[in-house]
Structures are given as C-alpha cells and as structure tokens.
Length: 326
Image (cartoon, rainbow, N blue to C red; front, top):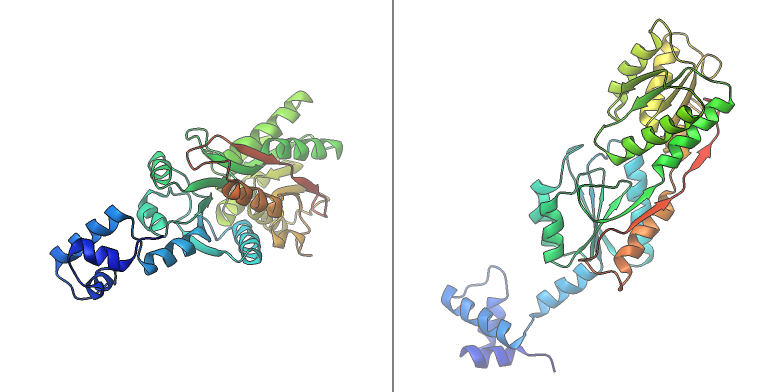
C-alpha cells in the first residue's frame, strides 16, 4: 500500500488538512510545521498527488535544447521530433540558447522539469551539465554532433563520408579547382566534413584550391563567397559546409554575373527545405533527419541503457541529392 496523507499527519502530529496545505504551493502554514511534515513524508515514502502527477508528466516529456534555430535545418529537426512525440502521446519542451553557446547558463531551468531525456543540438554540452544529468538520472543525447571532450551518447549523420561523397562527385564532374567554405572550426560537423573532403581530394592528388569560413551564417558566407570569386584564380566549384552558406555563395555568384552551374558548381550539406526551391535547386547531402530523431529517442527509451552509460555513438549515412547547382 502506498503511504497516505493520513499516515503523514499521524506521524507529524498534525491534521490531514495541514498535510494538504504543506504540499500546496502558496498555502498558508507555519514554516516549522511544513518542515516537519516534509521530513515525515520523506521518512515513510509519501508522495503528494500533485508531485505524483508531475512525475508522470515528466516521464512523458522530452526536452530539446537548440542553439541556432535561425538555421532552417534545426526547425526541421524540431518538427520531426514534435511529430514523433505526438504520435506516442508525449510532451516536448524546447529551450533555445544564443547560437554557438554552451548550456551552463540554462542548466537549472532545463533540469527543473525532470524530463525522461534531453536532446541537445547546435549547442555545446559541458561537463557540468553532463554531471548534473547523471546525478538526476536523466539521459542526454547529442543530435547532429559529437563531442570528443565529453563522453556522452550521440546520433549524427556520417559527416566524414558526406565530405568524401561531395569531393568525389565534384571530381567526377571534371572539377579540379575546388574551394571549401567551412563552418565553425570547433564543431564536429565542420571538422568531419572538412576531413572527409580533404582526404578524398588528397587521395586523387588534388589539394583544396581555396578555403574560407562562413561560420554557418548567410551574411558571413556571402562575404566569404564574394572574396573567393573575386580572387585572381577563382574556383570552379565550392563545397559549403551547410546549405545556408551554399545559398549565400549562389547569391554572391549571381551578383557578379557568374552562372551556376555553368561557370561555378556549388554543393551544400543538410538539404534544408529551401535547397529544393527553383531559385536555387541546390545539390547537397541530405541528412536522414527522421532516422536521426528515431535513433535518439530509441537511446532514451531503451531500458538497458542507463543515464550513467555513455559513449554510444550512432552514425547514419547521408544521401547525395543531385539538383541543378552542380
């Protein structure tokens, strides 16, 4: 039998009404009496109806922490996650952080709801946050990124292979002067895409013709694209580390009267909705968003995987989508 409010009242020497007031936020009761009631409740294992309800809600809740919702890729992830949770009658909480920041500033707020799992995408997990989640027995999954400095579970597209696929595709098309427009240097998405691209070119005896950074942002990529195309020896093709930057390079090329793909081939990564628009028809690597979300939830739902377990990384293959930009 579950402990009752009546048993708590008897142990604390108070009325059942006093027990009810003690567990009701804002209700009038002496501080000493509330403390005594709480101590007796904890000793006999009593959980108030409100707290039981909160625990049930928390067990059906997943929290998504996102740091760059201005990038259309992440609303796509959010939509896929929301649809999947709705199908299983679960709740979704979303916390947004300034782009490229870690989660420390919002740790207490994120953990307050005690969700059954936390999915972090486009934000940096810190050792402080990882420890706090283990202490509260909450599973954490990184989505679309891997952090080598912190052991935790992750689901990501095979960015290394995606970079190789782009390099091979451009070389098969006959391009040799191929530029690379990178994202944020300390992210796994940038590092792995760049490494795969560089390796496959090197194996063919070709170096990267020119490099620049667009920080995964349209404006920075637009300026970087202008600089690449204004060089004395401009590239024949550009591999951009995400689609937003690829769209910026296409716009920069058009402003200079450079035809895409006749004069310049452009390839992106992600396959955001705008990539298929007629104005761009972007060739890109499609990330398997639905499968990535499914794998992340399976890690959270798998009872054999404990919140203290870590180091599980699931890599999923992307797909080269050929359109009109290359």
